[in-house]
Image (cartoon, one colour):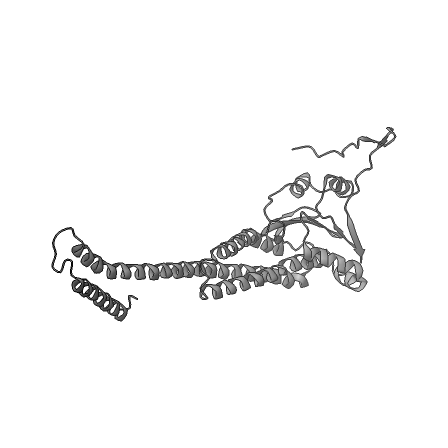
Amino acid sequence: MPSLPRPLRRGARARADGVARPAEPETPNVEQLEAAGLRWINIERPRPVDRVWLEERYDFHPLDYEDVFSRNQRPKVDEYEDYLFVVLHFPRYDKRLGRLNAAELDVFVGPDFVITLPNEPLQPLSYLFDRAESDEHLREQLFSKGAGFLLYKIVDDCVDASFPMLAKMGNKLERIEDDIFEGRSAEIVRDISDVKQEIINFRKIVRPQRQALKDLERHKRYIPEDLDVYFDDINDASERVWDMLENFKEVVEGLESTNESVLSHRTNDVLRVLTAFSVMILPLTLIASIWGMNVGVPGEADTTAFWLILGVMVVALSAMAYWFRRRGFL
């Protein structure tokens, strides 16, 4: 088993006068709330100094600490003798990259504590913590029902935050559908690709979490019996999210197919017109070629013959244009 990281030794740094002085130690980024005998500790983007702070106060399994500070952990629920360790993933829009990414939320749940460790800022989690910090009545309401209810509120708010994202995704699909039939098929190919990628990323986040939420419902150590229905509600919300993603997947695939059909139909229209013009010009080219040969032809050097041939070409062109139009080729 790998050894736990040791607290880093702080080196000395030089002052302007050349005299070395010790560097200031890092401060743990720990936020705490306490009420009704329950403590909520929130550590956003945990660092090694935060791990040292936790190890000094809580005897969690070393593998759990490794999971917190490692990347790409799958959603799961691990049950220990005196606490639960929960790993969940939630979608988070990264404005810097312009795409949806998975934000990992690690949670330790015990009889008198809930410790949340998001590896990226989660807006619903931060909002709930700030509200509980500023509103004493809300804090008492959340904490008085125990660690299980507080865990429910945290997970429920994070799951519900997916619905506004899905609503925006649905609006994008509606705009794309309107643009397809307004003649902007060529311009929205990239828009369809972007929305399709968002749906794929969203599904990659939600798919493995469905089983973790079902496992969370089955672990009832810190969840009173009257709260069973609450965790069942989280599973229902998760299934609604998945159903919407399945629907969006079918819609975007249908829009992509429709857009390709529109583009193909437009290309066929262009080719049909060009082909019709080519066929109309062909007999005129034949007539001009025959009377342009360097051999003697009827009417040679006769002005009347020139106008007669030109009239025949105009009549042939008009007749073919009329026929093609009657047949719907033009």
